[in-house]
Length: 136
Image (cartoon, rainbow, N blue to C red; front, side):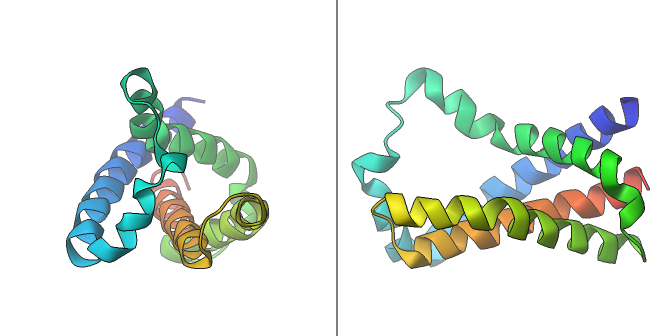
């Protein structure tokens, strides 16, 4: 359990830095894409709810660390390949169905949903690489 928490926290820190650094770069280079996020759908109301937004990388990393611990023996090869395979499995099994229904239920563009899927794939792959290196 200690290795799960340790690798989950380390992956959370890396995801936090990569996610928010990537967000600032994306806004800088693709500002027109982020106009869609000015919709009231994405207004959290501020205040207390920002905690949930900024803690997301840690919640995700700890959940994925537990999943990794349970199924790591199924992944073979060098740590990068194991991590990427882990990310792909998460993106297909968890994100694809979730984003499918989100696209059907919310007024969001296919481009936005696609970028969410790629972002989730990136996050899970980075976390998977961290887990494969720290908790083989």
